[in-house]
Every structure is written in structure tokens, then in C-alpha cells.
Length: 609
Image (cartoon, rainbow, N blue to C red; front, side, top):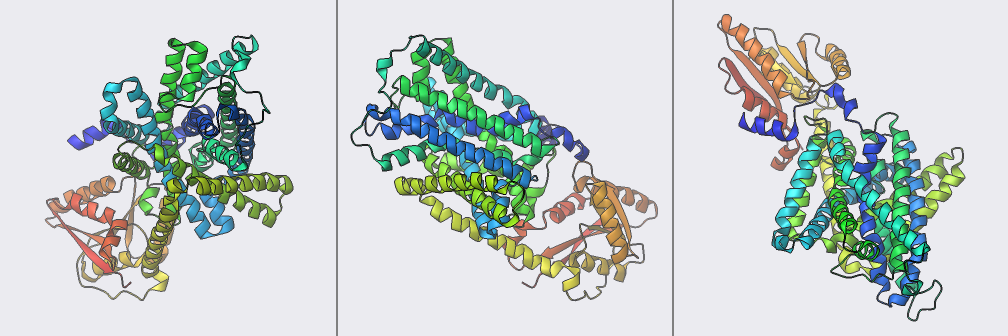
């Protein structure tokens, strides 16, 4: 009871399945919750360009303008490409689904695996960066960096477990405050420049020859600046979270995000160039621009405060996109099916919890110093960028829909630039991005092992492909069933062979449609066994089942006989595979074990492979 009360306090009361529509996002909330990662990159993207150019000298800062234009061209190509992906694949999945359907399973798994890891990095890097901003303002807290970061991750996890709309309602305000703060900063800065409030002698004129500049340096600066585009793909992964018509709303939100990102990014790059801001390890470029324009007054601290908030809240993009990507992988049986289960608040709570735990492990492992993960984080996005757009190229060439040449051109430009950026990361920052070459093959191996296991189990459980089950002597009254498999057949044969009473199969349905479909299949398969269907509006198997057993037990006690519940269970050949199966059967047994007049047992079905 205590644990249940704490859970209700933290997460809230369970929601009915038919309330799912109320948990969908409108465009305003979706823009805030799904764009926080992309918009937050404005705080460090322009700075990354200047960090590379300063190796040549401050005179090279004018190159930040053409480099920024190149980044904006890539942004436009990505936005237009992902807009096409939204309409082509309206059920979500983004780069994973596009790559799998058009390039093959392994390219799809590379894209999906890269993004799963990238969303974990998003949370760890964003929270750590935001924590650094806070402890920089309050140096006395610096030794507590890791603890503060972990607290933020836990708070974000709890907030997302409460539901998509609730987290969006809370997080929308800081995101829009950040956008407002930067618009004011850029607007006032440009006004001062136009009215002569800023000396034009601070910066080197565009076109000034610079000694030592090379194509390699420019490409490296371009790749570094492209880190501002991380998070652009999140909306295409999260289409199911939008209110209907979901694809239209997602596409409009994507355009709005791209427009905001373009304005803010180009504005910060221009002000940094015109004011000749030199990147520093102690003070960020945005901080220097704000101090130059406003001084150390309220507006300066307002900008710094909202920047720290957006860096922390950028992690929420991962919480929105990771669970939905995991659902697509789980439906294809590449990761455990537990990721497809909705929690009490209708969110995919298993994905949310796993993301939070993995992020905390990263933060602890790197002691909160995750800035070295930024190149790995960026290359982990550009690999799926490249694969998804290449997949769209294949799709347009194969299907040739109306206007396909324009679509092909957009995706081709995006694919080429994304591939170039990916290669530049490997060439210029190999010491920081080499783990990609290790973890991607490992992830692929894990995916295929899980899929192979599910297929092997499916082959043995499928009624049409296995040898018939021999009758077993025994006695049973209630058999909880989850599907039509050999595990269930094994248990029913046990019940039929021994029971002098009626055998009752009990099925818990989450949706009315599932109830109807299963009932029709059952009549054809086991017409002599009574099927009782229990509706569970809150997606719980245990609660309605135990309530039904208690009702039967009460009636049975009046006739002086005991109720026997037999729980179907199958035993994989390898013990560790139990992690993927039988969670429900173990919980049911635990909940029923101490009923006064109920005998609880299992009939195991041993897999041969």
C-alpha cells in the first residue's frame, strides 16, 4: 500500500485506455517538447564554429557567415526531407522505418540503434551542460555536479511518466521563454548595430584575405556548426504523439521548429561575428553577446537563466522520441516487447525508465563531464540523417510519385551533405567518435540475437507448426490465457484430462476490438472450452484477473470445494531468455498464491531450441 501511494503521488492516478486521445499534443505543446533539443543547440552551435576558426585567428571569424549559410542550407534540406518522411510514414519511426523499408534491415537497425544511443546521450549531455551552467553561477555547488544532474534526470523521468501532455504543459514555458529571450537579444543587438551603437571596427570585413585558412579548416568548422542540427529528426519519430490529423500537425510543427532554429542560429552567428566575440572556456559566446549588448543587468541574467533551463530541458526531446522509437523496434522483435506496453498514464513507461537509468549511468561514469561526448552525440545523429535520406532517394526512384524529381533532389542534397559531415567528423575528431565503430556492431548483434530468439520461440509456440500436445492427467478450473499457442494448449489439455468441473479460460482484453477478434478465434480453436473475457481499461492484467478469481473463490467456498488456477508458462532453453518472457505469469502466481481456497500451479512447456 505504501509503495502504491508513493507511485500515485509521483505519477498520478491511472488513465483509461480510451483517454489516449486526451494525451495527444497540439502544435504549441509539441513544438516546445519536441524542439527543445534542436533549439538548445543554438547555445553551443555557433560557438563550435568559432572554436575551430580561432585556431587561425580572429581575422578568420568572417568565415562564420558563409559557414552558417551552409548549415542553413543543410537545415533546409533536412526539414524538407523529414517533412516528406512524415507524410510517407505517418505512423512514426523516422530514420529507422525509412532505412529498414528502403535500404534493408541492417541499415534500418544501424539508424535505429544510433538514435537509441543518441537519445541517451541527449539526456546525459543536456542535463550535464545545464548543471554546469547552474554551478558556474553558484561555484559552491560545483562538487555536487553529479548529484544535481542525477536529480534533474529523476525529475524529468517522473514528469514524463505522468504523461505526455502534463510534461509538455510544464516544459513549454521555459522553452518559449528561451526563444523570447534570444529574440530580444538578437533584435536589440541588430538595432544597436543599425543605429551606430556598436563600432563597425570590431570585426574583420567579409572577404578579407586570411593567411593559413584551408578547405580542411572550413569543413571542420562546418561540421562543428552542424551540431546545431541535432534533434531535427525527433518530430518524425514522434508522430503518434500528435493530435489528429497527426501528419499535418507534425509537418507544421517541423516547419515552425526549422524556422525558429534558422532565425536564432543565424542571429547569434551574425552578432558573434559583428561583435568579434572570442570563444572562451569560462564564458559562453551567448553570455558574451548578452553582456556586450545589455551589460550585467536583469536582461543578461534572464538570458543566462533561460539558456541554462533550455539546456536541461533539451533532454526532454529524448524522453519523447526514445520510447516511440523503441516501440517500433519492439514491434519488429529486435528489442523486448515490454517496450510496447503503455503505463498507467498511457505513456510507454518502460522506455522512459530505461532511458532515465541509462542516462544516470553515463553521468556517473563520466562524473558529469560529458562535453567530450558532444562529437559522438553529433555523429550519432548524422549517420541516421544520411541513411534516412538515402532511403528516401531509393523510395522516390522506385515509386516515382507525382513531383518525385523535386523530392529526389531535396533528399539527394541532404544525403550528400549529411554524408560529408559524417566523414568530416570521422576524419577530424576520430579520437572522440571512434566508439561508434564499436557500439554499432554490438547493438546490431544484440538486436539480431533478440530477434532470433523471438523467432525460435514463435516457431515452437505456433499451433500450425508444432506437433500435437499429448493429454496430461490433472485437474483445473481456471486457465488465464494470453493467446493461441502451444503453451495454452498444453495447459488446457491438462485441465480437460483431469477436471470433472467446467474448464474456464480467462482472457484480459485492453481494447474492445481485441476482445472481439480473440473471441472469434477461440470459438474456432477451442469451442468446448468456455472463454471469459475481462476488460481492463487501465491495461492491468493482474487486477481484473485476481478480482475474477476472488469472485469464483467466494462462490466455490459455498459449495465446499477449492478453486485451482493453472498458469501457462514456457521455459526457454537458455535461462537468461526468461528476461524476455513470463513476467506476467510470475506476477499472477505471486498475487494468487495466498488466496485461502485457491490452489495455484503452473504447467511448464519446455522449448526445444
